[in-house]
Length: 81
Image 1 (cartoon, helix red, strand yellow):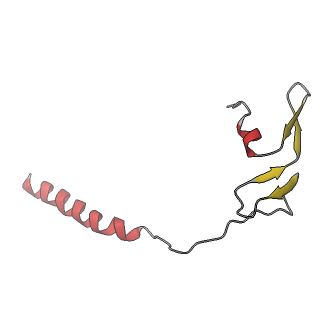
Image 2: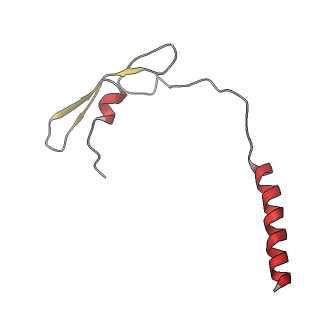
Image 3: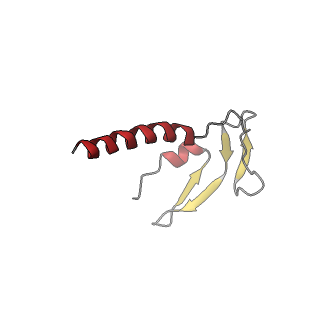
């Protein structure tokens, strides 16, 4: 019984030492990238890349047009699933 407990304690200690060293943290900062050439309906983007303007339209299930001008328009759509 003591042997099993000792094995568990040693295993836990070994894992607690190994696991933190496996996590790679990078201090490299990557610039934001948005491929405007391949995005259908792209209109403009702010210089910081936080605001995107689009002109995109899809058909609803009832055949009515659904227009998107920005990301907030997309977020307002009801969830289907």
